[in-house]
Length: 453
Image 1 (cartoon, one colour):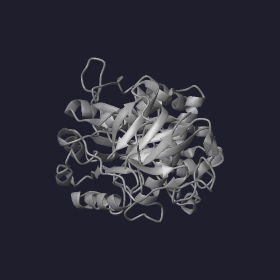
Image 2 (cartoon, one colour):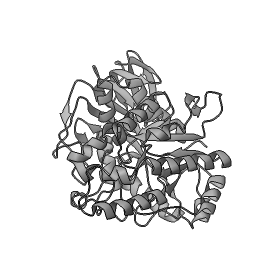
Image 3 (spheres, one colour):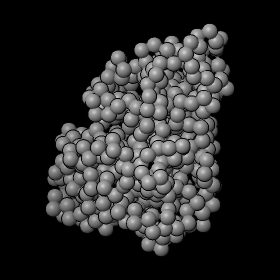
Image 4 (cartoon, one colour):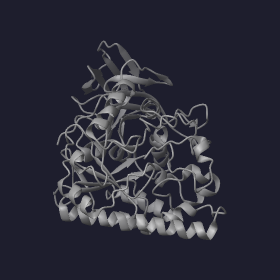
């Protein structure tokens, strides 16, 4: 199918310029002025709108297989596409955990049949599956996930020898969840004894505190420096941790240090750690209970600053849906995680409206840098010859999040009642017009991402 996008303000590689985009056979075949004479199957007049590379989210939990009462690959990919997300990388703490190459491939099979977005899945590491992890193909798998702190679907890796071996020999990027287990357990016991069921509103931030995060992240960074591992630390939640990272510069498809060497230790910020803070527990409670915990306003400001000065490299969601009933349990029983994928781009565009970040930087952190960090083949940029993963955004429209327009299978969002002053009108996934003004076109699914490593 040939698609022609006219008069779009293209936000790409640090510039904004009004041009036309021609899409053929799934690829961007031409970017130029005055292409209106070309005959196409579909013509989209994007006058007054911005065209951006589709968002690539490097951390989501779609719950399939085994937990499909919460979500499925199909349902959550669909919600993401409505929010301008064209590609995702999904985590291994499903049921069963993706700890063998066979179980991992099962997820790829499900996605090939149901995912409207492009996809990749992390290989999971445990204390005793080293041989399976070493079989991971760097060209086909986004990375290896290590939980250096227990979270939903406990896959904690805490054996020092195992960590040393994984960091020393992993065939591809290692993505880690960093919270020090000993610190969390000690504080959990302390607060449970102190408060019982009468917990203070911000207890989660007190239990999974700054010390737990920094202790684990600094250990991972030290281990990576010693072994030479390609390390990516997920969901940075404290200002303390931001000082562990050096400034990165994108160049020729790589993220480099200022001295020109490859930046081998990268990191991610999640939108909820930028949007919410400790005060929001008063009104939202378990809705924003997540690991690592949302902390105070100072940490929120430091994370944003670290994105702007390029110490933190990418923006993601850690999208992790649970049912409303599960979240209504008391604090000790309620699971951690919140659904965010449909609203990650609107959140960042709201920050643009507030003057906190430019459109160019949003695109860099949500698309360009993710593609470079993971070395994704022909995605993350608006370039001729690249896959046509595109979102069209209208910054003159607004929408209020409500039960009627939440697309997550779980049916709720901690953002309910929030008005966003931007709307995604169209999303193209690998050249397929998957979403158009509230209508999904699901006759074609997304593609498995490949990596140039």
